[in-house]
Amino acid sequence: MNVPAPFALPAHPARRAALGGLAGGLVLAAGCAGVDPTTYRAEKPVLDLRTYFDGDIDAWGVFQDRSGKIVRRFTVKMKCSWVGDTGTLDEDFIYSDGKKEKRVWTVRRLPEGRWVGTAADVVGEAQGVSSGNALNWRYTLALNVDGTVWNVDFDDWMYLVDERVMLNRATMSKFGIRLGEVLLSFTKR
Image (cartoon, rainbow, N blue to C red; front, side, top):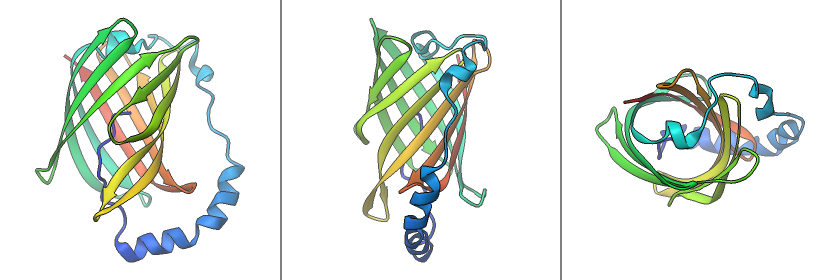
């Protein structure tokens, strides 16, 4: 949910090559199953987004391309607040190249550990499920890459380590083809 945009995706010829193999990738991706969030239901401490994402949070992250090479580093300063079951997560990104960006999420709790979220660059709504110490978000982000907007799918997992630290891993894909991963470490102030 807290991923930077835009990313440095593969160079233009590499992107074309990746798109050329999409049809085969779709067939392969159809056979892959993900982890069910309820796998973590007994894990402690229990992640409550309203408690963790309340106040000021700092994060440090990297984006790895699909080969595993780190192609972008960044920090995030977050200011988070809630009114009932609706939260605002105001994120300020600073990248290693000096570029700055902002994303503001509106997150809403639903029954049975489900969550929905929106942001200006999220296509539709992010759908989330929390269980135990984990949260899985799935959403599509509109990323501007070299003047072209790509709708990129995210499978975003957050794991609460203790009351202050949370780890986040988001896998990015397009047409079922893995583009890379975002890794983040959050610390609540």
